[in-house]
Image (tube, rainbow, N blue to C red; front, side, top):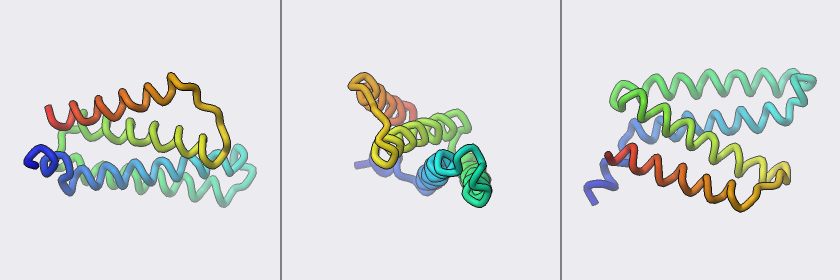
Length: 112
């Protein structure tokens, strides 16, 4: 139980919020059609700014390397799954295996 509590600190929740904002921004960028839909593109950029703000708060209590690796990994996972679900992008079985490795790596990095 101690390991679970160590993993889910407030700072980790901030990293997860930063990743969620980043994922939403990435999905909106795809919807902006290369900024042809200007408002959606600006919203995406705003969400990226908020994501970096959350990340900056998280690194007060988590090593930068750990926070950035978690943020990037969650972002990759969420953006890949979002593209798969919302845009019907194809993912090969090796992509899902890579996602499993990302999750394992995040756990090991945070708990190590």
